Length: 147
Image 1 (cartoon, rainbow, N blue to C red):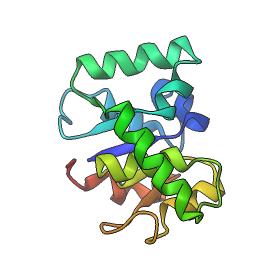
Image 2 (image 1 turned 90 degrees about the horizontal axis):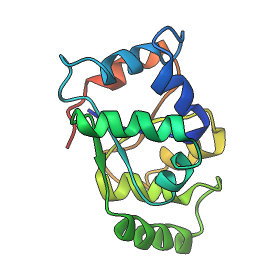
Image 3 (image 1 turned 135 degrees about the vertical axis):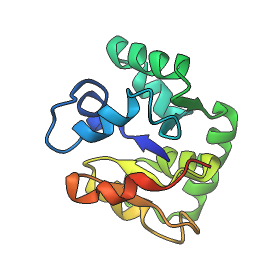
Image 4 (image 1 turned 90 degrees about the vertical axis):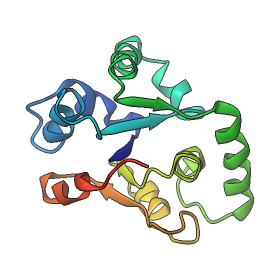
C-alpha cells in the first residue's frame, strides 16, 4: 500500500513506533516483512521534508530499503498547477492532492482538517477515492496494495 505523509505529522510517523496513532504505520514502514508498504513523495512535499535533516535522513533510509518512491518533481509541479486552476481546494496544500494524482497513492497521514476535505473530494482525487489515516481506528486503510 502507498501513502503520503504530510509534513505536519512526519515526525510521529517516521520516528515514533510507540505513538498511539501512527506507531503501526511506523512499524510497517520500517519492517522488512512489509515489502508492499511504501510512501511516496515529491514536489513541494520533498521541499518541506528537506527543511528537517532528520526527516530527510529517514526518507533516504526508506528509499534505500525500497520503502519510499520519489515522484518526478516536474510532474508534481505541473499537476499542482492543474489542481490550483480547479479552485476547489480548501487547504493550502494543492501539492499533496497533485502528488496523489501523479502517484495514485490514496491514503494520507495528516492532521490538517482542510487537507482531509480536499483529499477525500472526488472532484480533486478521482477513483479510487482518497482516504485519511489518523488513528488506529483506520488500520483497515493500510491493507490496499501499492500501485
